[in-house]
Image (cartoon, rainbow, N blue to C red; front, side):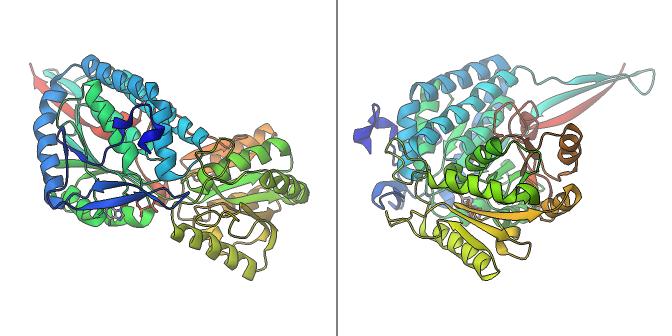
Length: 485
Ligand code: ADP
């Protein structure tokens, strides 16, 4: 992999602990494989819980001096980090595709998207405004200030190896928190490369550590039980989110949770069908269906059902499956064998319950972790795919009668992250957007992620918001000062 990069030194196998590049004391490593080819591309330091505790100690020591800098000073460092990410966009994209599998164009996009959080929150660092409140008694003066929570710890998944980290570290550092991140063990290389650039940007020692480890639950416990950690931020499954929330309860730790979704994608009979197909392709098949905002259930109104299905089939059959490092690839491999099992399971369950295969349905000729993009018609609410996220290239089409029907179906889930619909009637657009019980609604668009808007879910999809001016609040505490004069 090093031979593909202009800066081969961005590939690191040591962890970035308190400003030093370290091997595990045990000498242990874990392997990182390229999901397109199955070959091992790196052996990364497998840190223990004790070593992670050292990163937390360092973060604790470094936090107060970091918070004592002016917002502008922190902003300048975050801006330099942003510039460095963009200067090395191509290398970072290649590295990401090698460890994660997504097509290079998507990796380039993710690096730019991820970097944008550093730029955005650097700017916000200067605008952490408090307020003054008229006193409740003649001799009282009330001010409210916002202060950093302290040491923040993050746990991130493999599907966005860059952006899931910058969304957390950028607001944390902007607010004056220090940050320890445990990246997913499938994709630590992007995180470590970002740490190289953080160091170059002038992030002080200890303010940011990347603790690579295969011992996910042990590290999760350290983050929850170490009294020096005051904030936990997690992106991943609802199942693991619940475990972490329970663990964090003992310390009454502040938690941000970006958990699973089960996104409905609704096509009304007044929709622009070509636009809806384009949106469905982007939204369902981006990252090969492996995002928490990917359409999971596609609801199509009866009058346009057949026409939409035919157009979607034609568009899906044009998608090119292949190694993400080859230009022109639309869909890469899935992250691991178990991901394919889940796609097969949802597909089989749908077919057993009466769905009809429209296209795909098989392992791809490339073998390994490649699967054909698949569409079925005749999906119904009893199927597994109606309740659970597939996280793969499987698009089930459900039919519906009217607005009230589909709103009820769309909301009938424990999840509430992203939702999408296509319609042109203005009053329908307003009504449906307000009725969907989701943190995010895409209207006539399948792409909703941007650093300027608040990303996050309701119900069991999470707590807190990432991005926008609201995102920094997750790393700040309010303090109210009551003075008697
Ligand atoms: P995904 O299906 O995206 O891997 P997970 O929720 O299983 O979703 O994993 C998200 C992140 O959480 C990964 O980095 C994983 O290693 C980590 N993780 C999994 N189980 C635990 C746990 N019990 N405690 C802490 N982290 C965990």
